[in-house]
Image 1 (spheres, helix red, strand yellow):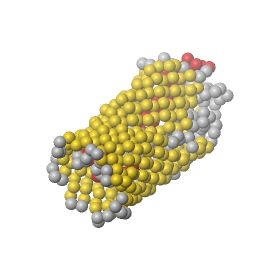
Image 2 (tube, one colour):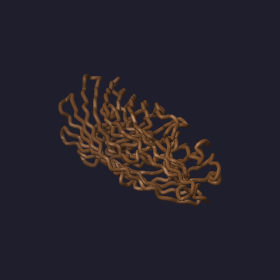
Image 3 (cartoon, rainbow, N blue to C red):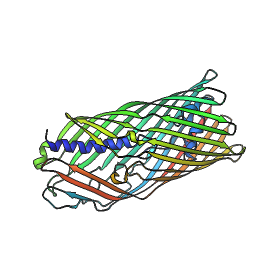
Image 4 (cartoon, rainbow, N blue to C red):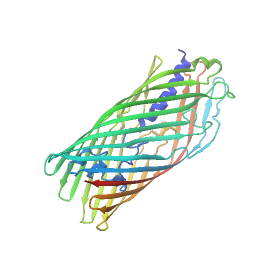
Length: 432
């Protein structure tokens, strides 16, 4: 197998799996924080200290003292994203470095997010409860123009994770509840990117990856009630993941033509552990104060192991651990109404010197409002709205094609990111 084939395959596979892995933790990357409408109305402040089937995705101990419950709803998110070229270049063998060319301003490449939220819980005896929740915790869909300045990193990206969480919770003492969850996650990913031919006038070649796989994880949690204070804790373990798929390279011409191929691909990597600690203080009969801190162990995401067509490689990553903070208020405005508001700050795990258009992330600040209307004694309607503003950040992605051969080509992507997100949710909770 030629070195051109090997390097081309590594470039598309590393980009695609970086996308797949970056979003698997609860912070940064492309996680979907819209897991519970009620929690979303406070920017997820104190989410791990809430009770009920609808917050099972945050803490398995939330079920321990619930009645038979069901929650059904939907989440929506609209992303406004603009990428602007800041001097991206390409260097082909024997030729001077020049601009990468193509569309220099890429507007609204992110597709809207829609996902159901489903959860159920039921007591089993006097001290046990079980529950099930289905969410889409990780999601990203980007489609850039085929001639965009970012095309050598990617021009189309699809990744979506569906999680089915089964949990059991125990009333361990009169004041302490404990929970255990098993998580089954299916990840589906697809990525298209361009690969440069040696002649500048030649059309770009195409790299295409499709991959999917099921992985199992686990989580534990606890709830402690101390008079007017409820403390919640959850730990989600790191997951060792494996995806199987197909990798294709088409359109290479001239001396690179022999590197076109179609082969099975495998990838292995670990996603971070996540620790969340939150609290709910009942300051008065009508006012509750919520807070949450979360630590994300991105150091587990140290490398990606690749395999395709008899080749293997380990790609080093440089993501960093992060800590996010959130605070919120909950006000009982009357017999039927509860209103909420919250503020959160979440740093990005993506390193400044390696930020790619596939994960156009930055530090984010989120403002949220929400409300619950008690329609009957057993039926509640939750609504929430959240606005996330991302700090100014720059793209910096250096790509090497056909390294170690006379065809070695280098591309450097430089640019600016402008991003905001508006999320909304609605759900019905019933007790029966």
